[in-house]
Length: 438
Image 1 (cartoon, rainbow, N blue to C red):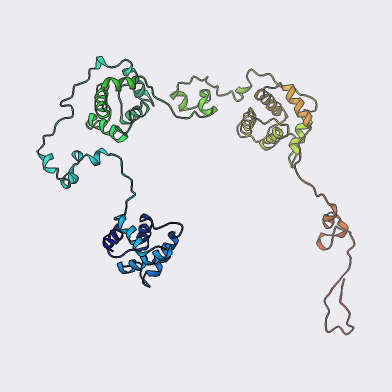
Image 2 (image 1 turned 180 degrees about the vertical axis):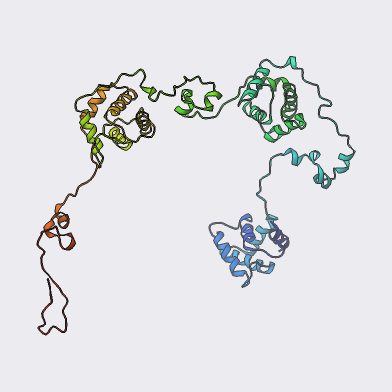
């Protein structure tokens, strides 16, 4: 049929192919775009037809093979050969479903080309003969005294944000201002805003308020609006802080805990500590009195786990807090260790009963209890709690707990040993009995 070969070559060359030879992908595209694929002839049937007409060992078909494929398609669809070829010729060629890119100034506007791009586009001669003008030529300088109300205050707020001096603006502050004031859109994107800053800065890094007004003039030209409208839009905005607030940390937020160089750096006034005053924390506190029964509970905790009475370690003190259920948000394990170290003193590892009473006094202050209420909690506990497990079935540990069943080296002194007979026999034993081992 006339016109069939050009359509075949057009589909074969689509996407960088070679005319005259068609692969399976192009054949499937032809069947779909020519309207040959339907319920009677789907894409799987098209692949089968291609494999049947394709020469063995090849990946592409020629125009002659394509004619045989059209005949098999007509047979599968139960139509005439002319109907199939007519549908292919009427298509005219492949259709491109690609998307069209949006307008990009530095790609679509050839007047912005420089260097090799300008030479390829034939603009090098025009650019070389054109005089280079300063960007301020032909523009009216903005008046500092006639700016929209509130513009200077908003400028100072943005320049002061993040530790700035409130007078000079860098490129980061400029980017934050254009973003939060709603100046960025299709006409002015982030890259365009940076180019405006670089044009006004002319190699510098900080711009003054007068330079800021020049940037607004360029922004107004880029967006196709007026200077007053851009200035009013900025005057109504303020810098937005999107940072997160950290949780309270005592040794960072409470400056009374600062020591060393941090005291002088932040100007914290602290009382000078006397060199001979070892236990300054006792000043202003009354000596805690003894409560009947507390010393017995103290010794019970000290001896728990193999310790000696009258000497409590930091680990045992932590168990006291756990068993008495004193731990919570106001008194953590770390806070309990700090109290123990304060009472224990430098170089010591154990506290006696007198220092233990001081521990209870400091703990009651941390828990907002009275000293007597804390002693009652301690007496109610009565002593340490054991979290160990015991065997639930005594019969399973018979050979461990029943010493009468012990044998050999595990037999207790003075216990009779039962005689054991060997199961080994000797061929030299004439009697033929089992050897007895006493």
